[in-house]
Length: 341
Ligand SMILES: [Zn+2]
Ligand SMILES: [Zn+2]
Image (cartoon, rainbow, N blue to C red; front, side):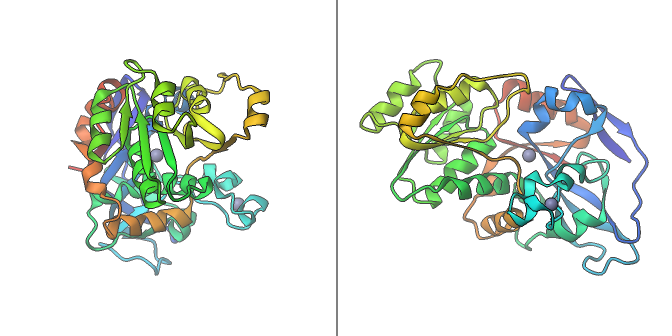
């Protein structure tokens, strides 16, 4: 079967790998669509594990079931979460599922950017479910990214009437925009260096869009908030400057959500003086769990999140290098989806 093998960001090859086989309590899924994620573009995060098959937002059809599998049958349309928590360790009983040691160790094999992938028993039991009938495979690739944002939003405590600032409006920024509105935010300010993305944010009804290359972000936020700053700032750009900007535009007593990592050796200067006297809360949110993926699926099927409108590019597996170029280089896209054809 064909699979897209990642060597580095400039070198992604379609290779012939052996088709996976299901163990007794596993299934094999024929991939139909799989989203390309911002984290698939973080070369520093991936290089030590390369070569590897990426793709952690997969959907498809059950193509083989192990003899002990009862909950799924051939032909079922499914979403599969690549990481699943154990549900019983110290972290899990505190609800910190993404901190569970098992979480990062679980994977689908070889990955979502392949014609077929195997779903191990743990992932099958907790992270796999049927896609609602009216939701397409493409739309369902948004389950994982929406779930990641939804998990962060649950921690942020957005109140009715709040002003939210979002730094970085790729797909995650747009999802945060939509979820913030659902949470009652009255004003959404977004910032991005790419004009294409600011235009898309306008289409999703952002109230104010700022390109910091052309405009001073702090001034724009102050002007829009009677000089206070935003109640909640969500930083989706994976660079330390974005976090520093986020701290600057957050109001006294406000909350900054760190939604993307920087490289491990990067540090951002934060003033404990200001943090203390301004009572700013910093809330990081990494990945998502079996809980939010199921709710995200409902948000898509109910139409509350217009998943389809967020998909701007589709590529067949054979054009994977082009897909990565689009997402990493021009960035003139929102969600990029790989299709198995
Ligand atoms: Zn992702
Ligand atoms: Zn656990």
